[in-house]
Structures are given as structure tokens and as C-alpha cells.
Image (cartoon, rainbow, N blue to C red; front, side):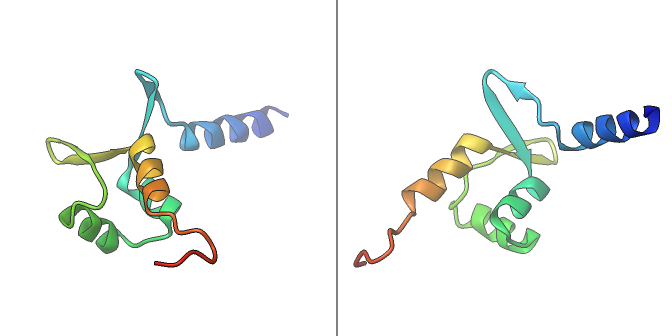
Length: 82
């Protein structure tokens, strides 16, 4: 039972995203997994200013709410004309 509990705690810690001022920040790896894109595509989205990001030193992070907003702004409903 202790081993199962330890495994569960490790799983939770691996997926834990701390909240800062009510905002969740994601790593590039998290965003790639969420959007099912490669690291190179993510870099292109940054270069093309499609996805907003924060760079602190050499670390790049993304606000979860910004990712959701971009997805909602670019949503095309089934059957709608472009």
C-alpha cells in the first residue's frame, strides 16, 4: 500500500502545475502535448506571433489562458463559410 501511495504521489507531482495569481503557466513541452504539435511548430508559432509567451532568461513559458484564447479566437464552427 505504501508503494502504491508513493507511485500516486509521484504521478501527481509529475503533472502538477502551480498556480500564480490565479494563472497556470505551461512549459513548451506541455503546450506541444496539448496542441499535438512538434517543438519546431511551437517555435514557428512564436516566431509568427501566433502564440503569446513569456521569456525569462532562457526559459519560455506560456499562460494557459492565452493558449485557450488563441484556440477560441481561431475556432471555425462545422459548416461555417470562410
